[in-house]
Amino acid sequence: MSPASTGASTIVGAAPHVPVSDTSASDSRMTPGGPGYRRMSLALFLAGVATFALLYSTQALLPLISGEFGVAASEASWTVAAATGGLALFVLPMSALSERYGRRTVMTASLAVAVTVGLLVPFAPSLGVLVVLRAVQGAALAGLPASAQAYLAEEVRPKALVTAIGLFVAGNSVGGMSGRVITGWVAQEWGWRVAVGAIGVIAVGCAIAFRLLLPAPKHFTAGSLRPGVLLGTVRAHLANPLLRRLYAIGALFMTVFGGVYTVIGYRLTGAPFGLPQGIIGSIFLVYLVGTVSASTAGRLVGRLGRRGALYLAGGTTAAGLLLSLAPSLPLVLLGLVLITAGFFAGHAVASSAVSKTATRGRAQASALYQSMYYIGSSVGSTVGATAFHADGWGGTVGVGLLAVAGVVTITVLGTRAARVAARREPVVA
Image (cartoon, rainbow, N blue to C red; front, side, top):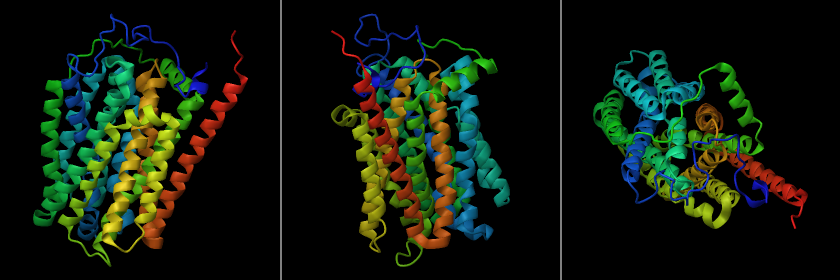
């Protein structure tokens, strides 16, 4: 049967250095319980923690940044959008470097530059300088996401891939949660500059541990840096309908998430809640829900299939958005729990499907996904903040619901395409 009819991923290109079967006795790739798997999982988990903690270090602090520089939410939100936009722009070039120089080398260099910039961010004298530093930091972090997924696709057996990527995404959620909680309480006592400095120091520790723990790659084959080769690989990925759908789904999920978490601090500091900065930072403990939903994405796909898991993730996110409209703090918190669970599950499912689909130019395939994903974050941050300025929290929720509707529509189109392909497939005697 064709991949479309079975729900399996379409294969792009070939990678003779990666065995097809993960049951072969000669397959030396890592598997849960095997040599190096725990070290690899912890290393990439810490890389995920550092990435999200740095990338969104200013998000919970936007009301304080607005106050210091005398700007509106839509202007302060650029400290988030610039970082995610920088990552989106540079993730493809950085993935090309990882094809030539190796995944571990590029990830290590990316973290080193990002944490260095992170230690400079607290000293930004103006909003403009702060936005520039955040853009540079995002560009530096671009070497992490695509390279990490490519590393996993090459070094981990296929049956364990969704779980392994889910653990990396879980690290993202822990980084996002801890960064916001820590900055919230630190900023309440010592201001936002000390808070982002603390995140920089934590990220330094994560970066050092990552480099010491991550096993050297055994299945990497260096590629070419020639622009023609890179463009040919990118065109091949963009010509794949499944990959195009997955890229759009990642962008739309992140549009919801970026908008909600950029604006939620403004909503909770205002009426009828009036919460202090430390308590608002603690709200981000709901990210722990994302840690669980991302790490269990493999089991979810096993039970419901990829498209079934995406339907469930989209429905959960939409239900959370609607609940968050209530003028009740417990219901708002429950809404955030559902939004977070749905987002991280959907992201883990879509990103792992990209890694399984492309067996040639994996870094570029993942980079295209990450680029769209972080473009979605930048769009969500700016559009969500603009909608909040114009129409309050209801405006931000409206933007999120439109994005979820897009996820569902794209998944429906994928389901129909699979059925059409199944009907056209000739019967083999």
